[in-house]
Length: 420
View 1 (cartoon, rainbow, N blue to C red):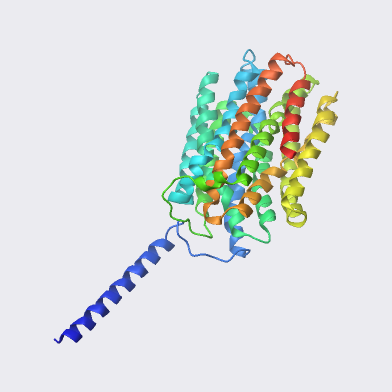
View 2: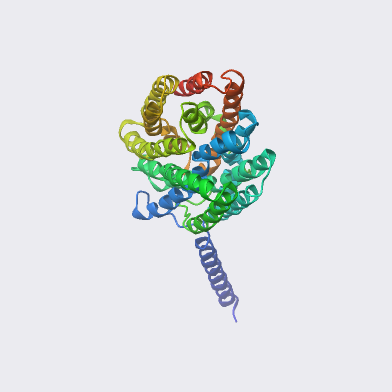
């Protein structure tokens, strides 16, 4: 064979090998949720992962939104002699760790893929429910229903937060609102189901059944967690460049402040009903109204934000929350005004849950959304931790477990600060 022919054969062989390797890499990339083909935004396909997120939110936030049922039961039935501050650790850790640990799980979702991260969360949340069902002491519930579930929920929420914004541009607010409305829908049936199971089966079996349902449903929904834009390879686990921008710190400060005051009504509306002569069922019904209003409000918030702007909608909703919360809760002398409070608070207050991810998605690149949202959620988690524990201490020490005046003022002032 001549040198020219041999050189040509070598070139052809190298080209064939390169083509085969590229085809193999492409097939491997398409098989993973880490490197999918980039699909167009605002398409019908985007609603598939968005609706999967909505269903998973029912189980992630449904646990925290309906925790008021467990809180009322623990405070007034099972652990009557235990302080509200101690019992508040359970619900506080669910939400604070769910959000705070997101700084690590969000970066992990961008690194190893959405589905593997979500499945870790499914296993941990299920284990938390089962272990909590065997708990006999408060500290055991704090570790299982609080710590373990909160960490597990963080693995589930990490990919969930960034899916709707990356699939939509024109309808980004609506998609985010539909997804987070799942937390309110979950709060609705979680609240009703939890109360019914506690009344008829006892709290241990209520926890076990919730664990089984969480495992079955979220396992199926995790399969539909598709990325639109592939993650960008990077050396660092965290998106440290985000911390150099002022907008990141403004979003983080707002999230910290609003979460400091937000959960007071959810945790204590049942106890307020009991103080006004109501029953545990009245407390459960008030949470149902709160979550029903929230489901409507979160979807409307996305629609309104798409039309009038994210910042305008966010400011107006937070300011109105303070106007509603203080007079209706502080002046309530019967159960009736509490229903009005829950309906209005539910529709108006959780707007930030729909809009904050949209604001982040407009300020940062799509391929690092999970990481940046995780970093901002660290501050949200710190707000939940500080706020809920402070509210429990204020209720014990300054309100003397007889009314909620000082607790309400504390909550409203932080929400107002978030608006400013």
